[in-house]
Length: 252
Ligand code: PGA
Image (cartoon, rainbow, N blue to C red; front, side):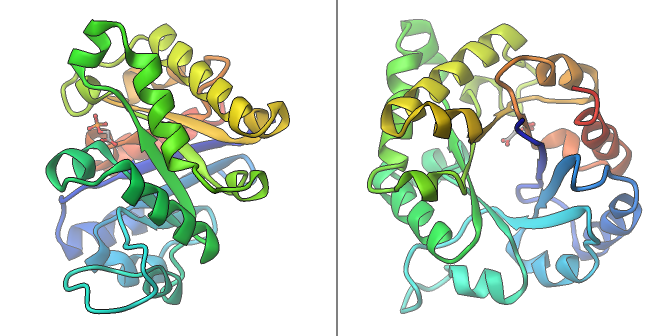
């Protein structure tokens, strides 16, 4: 049984006061962590303030980190910096990082390895563009991303990761993949993981869907056989909306 994960991705939104008041309002209202893993991935500058107030059932994650232990990497944040604040999750390889900040599969693989080594749960993102979907090459494209992200990672390590399938055409557009489209691609990601490791690993690794998830569609998505949770941008910014999304994790 794969425990559901409901993860908010705040991107570059909110100021400090808004971030803190969100956590105060939400942390006592999300489901118990034994039932649903609920995470807010916040801008790095808020992490210290938020971790202090996160509570048992609402955990705080980062949106990015660098793969080196330390060094002359102006503007970057290391895994040790995150763990020193008690941060337990990090989003890696989000399509905005890939597209706007030129992150490659190879870089994402290095970051994934570093997160695992340092005891941070990576939420490894994959997903195709509209052109790729229309060309009918989604499976080949997404499975290549997964194979590259997990290069050199053992089964034992892979079990510590979470995957997020986020079709780029559905992110922030209001267009959600249908639950069947999302489930079919996620099944294919699971098959790719089975081919890299084995069926046992593939049946344990949680795979989330992301892309215009909101209270109105979350239950249908989470009811699908292979969708183990959601990575949510826009609809994670409002406290009541996020509470509804987290509670939806209890129903499926
Ligand atoms: P969205 O973003 O929910 O606003 O579409 C999802 C994401 O980018 O993680």
